[in-house]
Image (tube, rainbow, N blue to C red; front, top):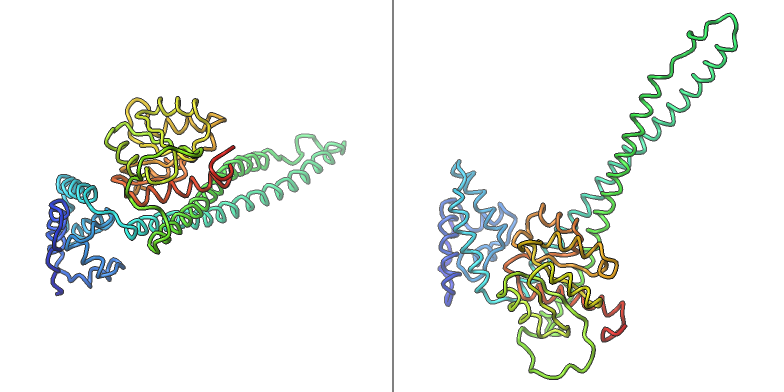
Length: 372
């Protein structure tokens, strides 16, 4: 069995603590790094770096490890054990040095998720479309049969030697037709929703591809400016505005620091109500970055209010959420009007790439420099 590499040199205490916990979980599986990497279709070198602490793994890698260990042992890990590793993971991420490579991995995973939703929606749309067409054909057949029977009813009534109540009964066919029409209505609604989901997923794919292009430029050295605040100086032109909404002061300060090297005017507020007020004062925001979990009015409710207002309905919203990787919560976010999401703790390069792309789209629509 291939031995684990020693812990990496110069690790932060947080990265070391996480790596030691993950190594304990992995050791209990009793397999080599290479064999486990093959099992999970992962690169063995990357997996090894996760386990020696030189890289913080995505949370889904940790979840897979818990899942495989539960299968191996025949019992699941306790909620307390999972909560402990989750806390260590968050602390390690918060203290890790961000890199464009990690940001690329995050964006690639998001693109894969969006592509999967698009393909699944397309298949569902085809299935629903076929079912809808089948019902429509059956209704057409029933209409012909009902018409024939109605004609026979009329003919029977015209015959004096036959009783009227002996005419063919079409009530059963009418009930079947009405039931099919109700199915057609439901299927049409499902098809519309599925096509909308596919279109939104395709839109996300396009946005994520642009974000990946921005990060690839960073790796080549000709992309976004570094994570260093610029020297203070006067603003010489009108800048597109970015609205940041988070009830945690530390989060606001961190996002402002990360985005301060980009060419935007940052407006930071600490509640959903303040966000709505800011949108009344300004109608030229390029993008809104909004925390989901806020008191009084959460991100979902705030987004719904924003989308109902004509002046702000077109402003793209990026949700900032600790539940970003959960398909249920990301789907709810998209349903509320978000076009993108960032997981917590956020990767500075991912945040900057997303904001840069939405700002670029805003400038394309409104002209260079953000002038109207």
